Image 1 (cartoon, helix red, strand yellow):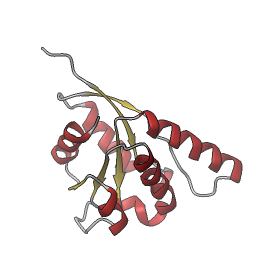
Image 2 (tube, rainbow, N blue to C red):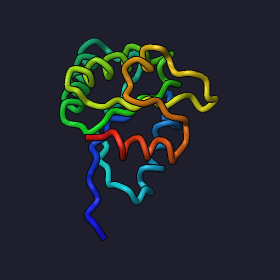
Image 3 (cartoon, one colour):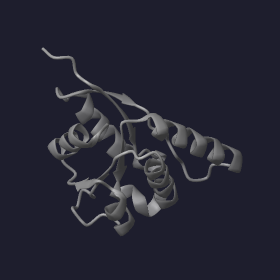
Image 4 (spheres, rainbow, N blue to C red):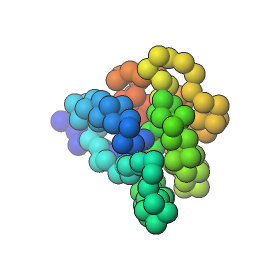
Length: 136
């Protein structure tokens, strides 16, 4: 059996949207197409200024070294500022962005559509295939 490539992924993650993150991590843990390392940085509303800046710097560093960034459109409304930082850092370091449409299949926010290499359905096979195809 060939050696599986290890993909270092930064996945959208926030305290109030834990279910999205946990579901995708479960899917990735059971894929036979690649190994993966979770380089995500959790975000919560209500962080003090110092902690906000520390997490922002950590996110920038993790994105600089990752293979791919996965953003959930469902999180964009409540955590748009955090998602914008992820988009900005991914563009700065030329990292591929994969957008995941909401579970109700409504369109992703325009800014995500413009910046993501691909926007896929909320579906295990679509997310895994996009990571496999687009990650560095």
